[in-house]
Every structure is written in C-alpha cells, then in structure tokens.
Amino acid sequence: MTTSIELAQQLREAGLGWIPESGDQFCLSAAEFEGEVFTVSDMTIEPHDYDTGTILGFNGTTEWALDSVALEKTLWLPREDQLRDLLGPTFSFLLRVDDMYVVEVDRGGQKQRFDAETAPDAYALAVLGVLSAQTA
Image 1 (cartoon, one colour):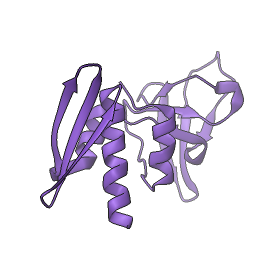
Image 2 (cartoon, one colour):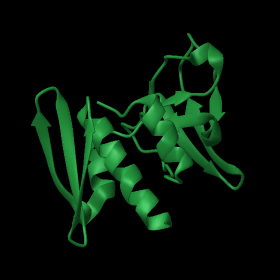
Image 3 (cartoon, helix red, strand yellow):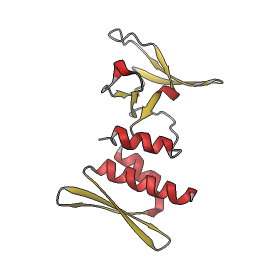
C-alpha cells in the first residue's frame, strides 16, 4: 500500500527525491492519466538515466500511447516500508488505535505522534514532520 497522492505531493514539495527502483509506484501529472497508478518493473517500465535526467521507458505497452516520461512529470507514491526507512533511527513505533494508525518518532528525546487513516499516510506525515524540523 502506498501513501495518498496528496501526501506524496507534499513530500515532493518538502524536497523528498526519488530514484526509481523496481516495485516503486507512481502516477503521472497529465489529466488523461488521472487515477492511473504505474509500477516500475524490469519488464515493462524501466528507468533510464541520461545526462539530461531520468526517463521512465514504457516497454511493450501497446494499449498506451506512451513510450517514455520524464521523471519530473511523475509523482512517486512511496510505500510504507520506504517511508519507515526514511525515518531511520527516529522511528519509535506504529500502532493501530481504533480506526487510525499512529506513528511515533523520537527526535533527541522529543516524541512526536502522527495519526492517519492508513499506515503509509501516518508514515508520510511523520516523514514530513522530520523534514520540516530539519529545515526549521
């Protein structure tokens, strides 16, 4: 399960970069692809690095009129495990409380809790909290 599009946009705006790997999911900013989620795969969607930037090549996708797309035109939808890894040693725990997920981080003895309806969104909020604290 990935984070919501809204939180993925906030993560990008906060400066979170993306180096595409097999299994990563993303969406495109073009209106005709709204609601479509793509998965990087060694078989169908491969990242190609050039001096001008990274291009995601669509291999054998005859049903789409899409050969490739610049990384800047995509929005990475990080998975729960990727977000947890980004928290590193600040991550304390993930807990389910009623119908919410709670992620707690510990930044030098200062604990912060982040609540959301899904675990990936709780992790995304925690990453945003850590990123904003680093830039403050």
